[in-house]
Amino acid sequence: MFHRIRRRATEPSEAQRRFFEMSAQLQDQVPPGIGRPAAEPEHGEPASVVDDFLPPELRVPSHDQLDGKVMPWKQPLVLDGEMVACTECGAYRDWLILSTRDQVWLRCREGHQQHETRLDTAWYNRNSGPADATHATFEDCLRHLGH
Image 1 (spheres, rainbow, N blue to C red):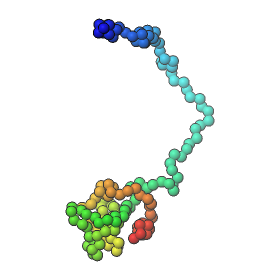
Image 2: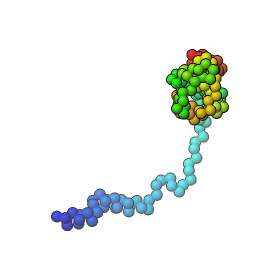
Image 3: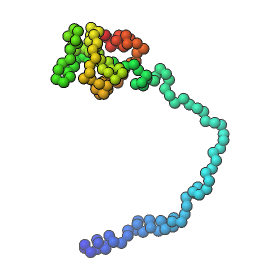
Image 4: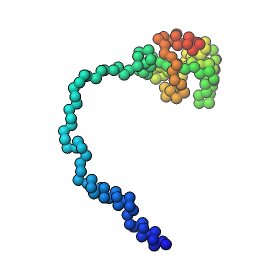
């Protein structure tokens, strides 16, 4: 029994035999169009130019077109095991975190701002979500965020 299985495995199957025969027939044939110069395209009417950019009201400004980015941070901010508090009023939650010119600033509800050297733009980008609006002035942004 094992002898028959081995003998059958050494001989090519019917499908393999047909494949080899077809390969031999097609060996010297060349597909159409190979070796001939490419056909010249017909010069009918020119293709219309389509503006593939979004309309201006739907475009999002790139990072180099913005003066900065702001995100709210409601919970206390803990850095290096220490809770950050406002240096002027002592507030420790409900921050606005501003990222501008590779610096991160914290703004408390009272409007006091302090530069936070332990945070950087990479930290801001990891923790901020997508922007929901852009504003022409900083005051418009503060109004939008309820400060």
